[in-house]
Image 1 (cartoon, rainbow, N blue to C red):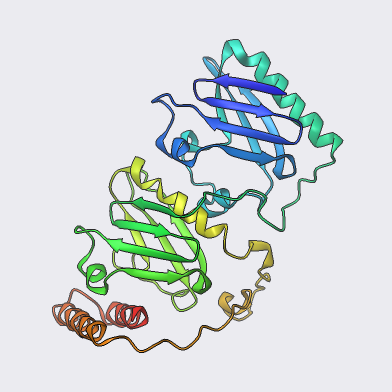
Image 2: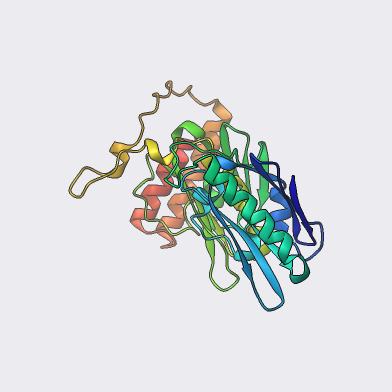
Length: 303
């Protein structure tokens, strides 16, 4: 077994799997420590490189496109320091890093691992249930449903709609953009009904507006990844050609939901109250006509 132990973490390669364990030092980003150990199968790897620098070097694994739900969910937008497939290496251990890189390259060659995109996720993503508290609210995922509970600082429109619950079967994809500390980020759960929604994240009842602690808000990528890992793989979607129908029509068909059971009387009272609140926001000019119609539809679907 080839292994390198650094303050930033430990990489061990047994010939078929690269086991990546984040370090416990305070310099290791919270996201990597929370994401935890990652076992990367050899067939998910497209390449590896060691990049020597002045004070330190970096080991980097490049995964095949479509192999990892984390990279699929984050779209390459994770900050470099939060990348679990990167290891900071002290210069006195550069020889060990080069040895591990060469061992992995040799195994890729022997096993003739292709570099083409995969047709299924080869890594599982985070275990569920997973829950993250962000600046806009708390988002949880239990493997079948996403639930968003808004915070006291969320926009009035969102608080008026109440908690948002979305079944995994209703989701098309998760859109995620990190909070950089200079610009707000967001995490939006796109359903078939909202696929063409243009509401801004701060008013969208299906989106978290990430504007607070960049370190904490980055953890929302855990939920985005867990959900993405349980959605149909991107390769199952038919490519949309120019001039074709809207993309939603080309997505993998999902079973129809059973008709909703009529809500109890107390739910009916809550529904009426929220609709009245939305009507007041609309009359006061807080919501535009389009925003009012979209948010009202979201409230009705929630009941």
